[in-house]
Length: 415
Image (cartoon, rainbow, N blue to C red; front, top):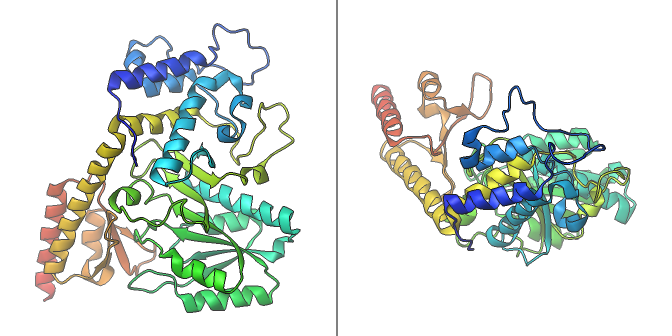
């Protein structure tokens, strides 16, 4: 993958140019737009720092990126065409450079978060099965592992889908194929004919990456009609950069869509999820009733802030592909250092080798120590089985060393 980094001035100039192509609420006779500039008592438009703060300048400009611009392009709302172009660049980089898609063969948009991006995928596939196979709602089921994000049961609830949760191996965190087979056969006996399958590029709790060939081989061999979505909300901006042999990308013919999430590894503001899907599927989300919207709407959220797209574009351009790879490899080095110490202490944990997340078996850590360092349990009850550490930019080596020293002291008392 490759895209060039830009200087701060180049980034600022591009964004100011994009804002200049958007409408100006103050200077344009806009009688029909149900939006306006931000309240001037709180958001002063002439603040001098805005000249050197392109994200804040975009935020104050208040662009609405409603719709999916990879589908509609010139037909999208013309009032915000400048910043929409930068969103298109983001989608192109994510789909083609990071996930190896063919040129101009993917659609996508910046969603309000990974949860909506997952919901968008499941919604589109439900509609796809209903339209193309005349399937009833009871003939469609959602399948995901017990380690998958809670947005999956949320989507099943919202969309009225039956769901089947597949067990995983306690140590490897991989899907139990025997349970997958049993659950699918149960679903089929209940009349299910079409399956929406979720696999993970780094789960939220463990950072585990599903070996999807095991699952797709089973589905194909058993002639099961399915659509496969990859939830890469956590891993999407680290795993493709740290694993040059990453198989979770658009070169895999069985994968149709992805979720990425900027507000995790990319360190962009909350509200910067990314939805990507192969061409030909966004039409199943068309809200034809939105006739007053130029280009119509294909998304769940409808109106969304263009400033969030700009924050992702800025981050990608600030580092370039080479710089971002180095940054992610640095996080892996810190993670590996912690794991080396845990190995010496004889402490059992799970860690995906190319992911910056360590999940330690709870029997090795007291509740007091876990709470002191704000480790996350796998369950909110009093008997968690795992405690999670995420090695992010804010996690300093000194804090990690202090935690490990206190953990060693605890283990010495136990032993």
